[in-house]
Length: 382
Ligand SMILES: [Zn+2]
Ligand SMILES: [Zn+2]
Image (tube, rainbow, N blue to C red; front, side, top):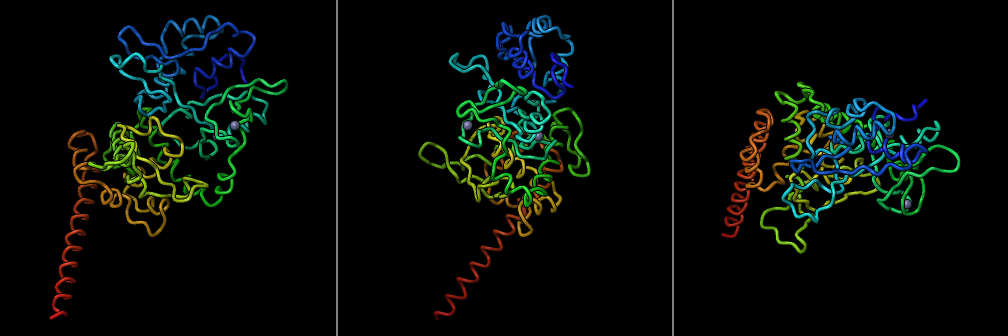
């Protein structure tokens, strides 16, 4: 039985507040949004809420303010960086022109969670995991997250209180409930399940790192939690960056390294899907769940030296993901990264250097073969 006024264990504070506003007691409450504190920093009610808001909400809704503060994302994930959350509008620094929108989190959902809640006559609510950029799957149902209506494709959703039954999340355009799973995901489920499970193990490591836990040292040798997150951020940025000097109308191109990591299980219903360049320090922060899954799967295979990971995600014939990454990457761009940032783990830096060496060796060998071929042809002509 769900207690009527306290947030649920894994609920976002703004989701709890929205549910309260819909109930009889909360009618006069205004919608919480991010505000700037005295120093000009954005304070989002879900991440690090202002004391004044916490206290007012606690008083009005008869909950302890301490209990509410415990529910904030900053408490749950003490090592969480803002770019490891998904944003509809990114928080901009204080000197950014005032026209910038108030930061708003981008919310995805798991249709299985919503369906289960509805079947149990429980109100729909937004889980904290649905706004984390390090997750593209629901870990409870091992199911891909979605951010658009399966019927009409709209990105808008809202809560709705039906005449009978619990609170639901519905599409803001066609009003269909969001608990219906996508047909292409259902079709792909059987073949893709093992691959999804593999991807989820990495997401769990990242979520652990955001909570301040040291990553599994058998998998990620001598890698601290912050190094793991930094590596993922840098790899995702490199994977989506347009090659230097690339002149393209509108500045975006599909000639990016991420498109060398096609995995049909991760993109159900979209065979050989090719993404556009992003050119952001961390594309995960504004990515759709689909792009997040692809970026995280590629980053997983690149960082994890176990060849089984590449095989599980990209097939038995795929070369080691780190070699594909280095081969598809512009040299100067790749060289600029560890030097500029200096925060990759020594193990990963060494693995990248080894992959670069292999690339050099391959290219020398190819040149040698080409010369020999040219020599043979010249000889034959004599
Ligand atoms: Zn779920
Ligand atoms: Zn719709």
